[in-house]
Image (cartoon, rainbow, N blue to C red; front, side, top):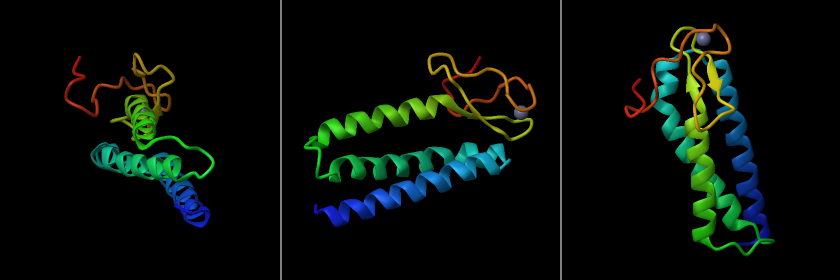
Length: 119
Ligand SMILES: [Zn+2]
């Protein structure tokens, strides 16, 4: 991988990350976001992996890159949820115990993304 290719991946990751964040902040359809969020996040993971791996300055092996990116994606997945009431994207600052109230309307966050988090 040469420097020019690395720059293209950096640009793509940046553009995708920006679009992804703006979409989450602007779109108010919690159902839609809940459905496509895992795929969007997975694609972001692939790009980030490419970014870390292609950087000519680091000689990080593919395995360490994958572990690092996987961790970041898993934490993001846990920290981000969508309010059923107002559709706002809720970012939790506590990844151990995800946010239980919406910061926008104060609604209790009852619907989780996965099926494992039923309370
Ligand atoms: Zn809300």
